[in-house]
Image 1: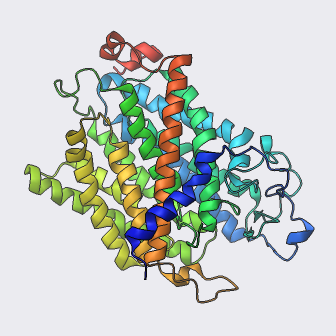
Image 2: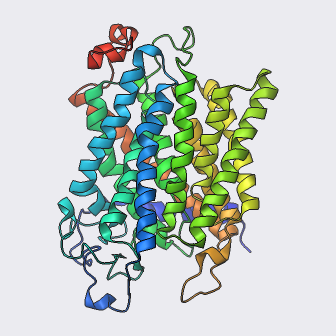
Image 3: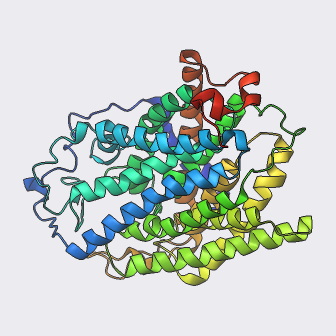
Length: 470
């Protein structure tokens, strides 16, 4: 049997080679247009609308939207200084608006139509064709080998995925808090949504994506609700952001304590509740898999909060309120890719690992390398996402993958699945890191990235928005 260390670099290199050699076209003339009415070739793939599933997905969509506004907005706002609270809330609110329109215009089409293995086509540009089957069940990837019949309308599926597309770039804002121009933030988020988020979502979650299908003998990447697509993606982009922008004025020498930890805890609590829509909703049905995803999400989150709390208690002498909240978010992040694949026992292990390791990454690792990841986007989301993605390959439970052709499921946990997870992690880190760097440089040339030192000292609330808290 070949050793993992011998085969993994070769497989990872081969898997990433197409990305480095060619830029995929926005449309493939030979590909079947994406998820529209079911063509004749896919007639055998039947889909039937289910009112219960649809109701659950509408609820899940609202829960995931709540994660950004007000959840993430309050979580981040509570961790900055008083002079930047309104500007921080405004970032989450504005990103919600910007990505909604971007997703409607092109993002959804690029992510979830068939296209080619690297990007979707433009058959859903401006949501074209939505009027044809608005009250019918949707077949994801109709006409492709990996077509999946769903029991909800396409409008509901599109909206659910929109809320994921909204929160992912919003997470990045935590890395550059207190110092980025509002105009630069707006331009970057639109570009990043189109050139980074949509392609990676297509790779992993579309019917034709190369990571979801598996490459060079490896199984497809297992990412139930966004370990690669959301958290690693946002985490590495956040690390690039704080490196490109540089440290905050006074970082390391001035007091930058959070102004209102209560806001942060309320925000984290809203994230926790909303995350049930995030993870359990990713079953796209009200079924047993959704129930298990909800169960393991709760267990992992509680375990991670305790692990962070006790790690901090042991190293610093006191368990902080903000630490417990941050640990809970780390657990939510790590269980996300595994939530539809693991049983309660492994979820406890994932949560404990995430809490302890993310505490280390948000404190010791950050200080070791000296980067100013203001609100620990990389330390929590990047590192937590990597932990969850890799441990999914270790603990995945085969029966959760049962299909008509494989009623006992596929035994996806093991060395080959772990290798597939490593490839997915590397692909996400490389693409998101590289393209995020390029986009930051482009935005810097067009509008400039950072406010002046004087403006930063005065505070972004007044400088960027002409308002302040009383």
